[in-house]
Amino acid sequence: MRQYYEYWVAFDLIDTDGDKRVSFKEFERAKPQLKKWGVDMKDPKAQWKKCDADNGGKVLFDEFANWAIKGSLDLDDDDDVPDSDIEVQEIDRQAQIKKYLADHKKDQAAKAQPKQKSYDKKIWVELSKALPWKWNGTDEMLREEQWKYMDMNGNGYVSLAEF
Image (cartoon, rainbow, N blue to C red; front, side, top):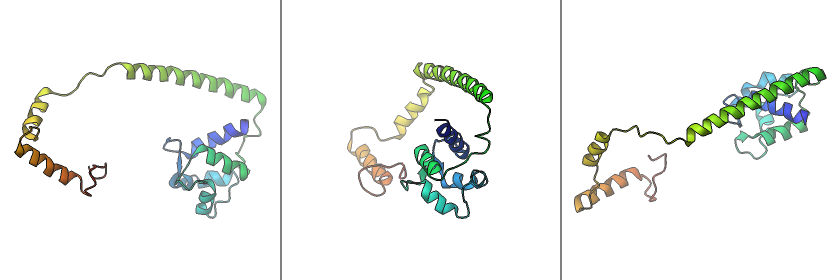
């Protein structure tokens, strides 16, 4: 269990953008650290292929842990920690968890409160004058032209890329 946690810490160090996924760019940037841990980084792409088991382009923690276990990744200073230090680290970890839970509760409470509307009604009046919203022939034709302009590939959907 301890080793699995250490792999999580290693994964977290490599995941510099904090999205809980490691990209090849992050993996390559961690080359010096991976070398310290005993990984042969002469060919980073080959190691990446081994690590990215599902070839998804991003490495999730379970892929990383399996790769680390197979490669016998040896994190520096992990075996030399006295039990008393581990207990101190555990107390610190519990304090971090308590702080995280308290912050999470605050975030949830803030999200639960209804947000005040921050728009100006004048803007909506101006928009309704500018956009073809009426159900007459002219506005319908304008809406159809606007749709054709936005739906560039003509599939009947506007994707984020087209937008």
